Image 1 (cartoon, one colour):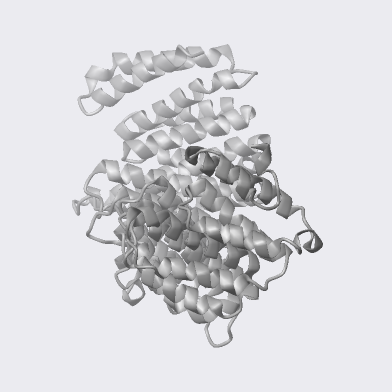
Image 2: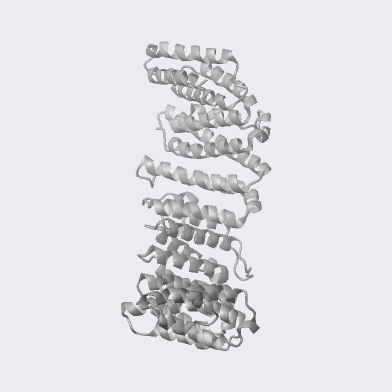
Length: 564
């Protein structure tokens, strides 16, 4: 293989070795050439450039495999980047002729793929140096796309992506044609082709203003369809495209006085429509946000997960400072995603939606905001909790008047579960820095969380219990006061089934967090809670309305005491 380490291909040595070893010899030569060209000057290759280009273009028709194809393309691009560009257009034409060939035999496919890869590498590396040749190249590639198998479509999409990147705004005349080709490939049956098309679309979003203005809804709808049935890699790429598209619509990279940026509400509604319905369905024409979000068709989990990642990507593109300024709008919108349960045929789908919303909040708030901004976010979440509990109070009054429980209670539990989960995570992350959140009783986070312990829905009560435990672990000085508060409230509301269940679960959660607090709790607290558990079990049979809650709560508290 030492004979392969030369600037020009040693054709004599290549002829002497066996047919089976020749591809390895060529590959080794290309590896060496790739390293040499990267460190070469124009004068180093001036004398041998013409012959070198001839040898490389000859290898295109030798049916190279994928690794060789990749190296071959990179070496060709490097030669014209380092040396002269006299033979550039001739090389582009040779590659185009290979692609245009009507030979459909399997043996010719590697040569066609190599030619496509070489074009992509040259346009990516040389960009505007290729002149107007890109116009013909784009038409040839798009025409070839219609009759290509999946591997060919994948390579063509990659080449179009590199062409858009390399030419930048100079290739604007081809952007519409490339966009049309990508639209077809975005719903291709091959996931690799979908992924390549999404990457090409991503480059178009960066370079073509029409993508995030006049075609905003069309591209978003296309992304929703592409997410359906997608695999992990395709889903991540499409989500990145969608997030960047929304960011470009909200904050264009090339401001245009004639076209106004999309409003934040409109951008968020596009994503919300996809999350809840899997399609746009003319969201801008609906009379209210509620009508837009409330759909009747179920959507696949792939779409919902993809849009979840798109939300995160969108916020990351907008930046942490933008998030700080719009934290109230963001939190209200994201929590509203789970406020409607009607499109979901089962509780499992609702829980799945909750997990998606929790992922969005944790990725963005926990990963992008500083300490002060996280404290502000925690206060915003508390305001949402208070608002939801006020709604619950009104719904409970209606139920007592015989008007029916309504949908408000079932809706509020999902919002509260997500809000309390994020609040607990924030407090745990902040640690003792979260002390301002509990310092003032009027504006603190403890009272809103405690108020959820009497929520009619079990999931909301459990989330509030976990959140209280998180506060106690982050701020150990709050552990004993929280225990006292729960014991006192439980004693006052002993005739309420929800209060018995809620405060007992809170006590159990607080006891379960004691081992994480080095100072622990006074010994008398354990005795006091044991007495409460004993009394609950003893009086369980006295009231049939409270029998189940008292029995469950008593054993729950005994189990929690065993962790001390």
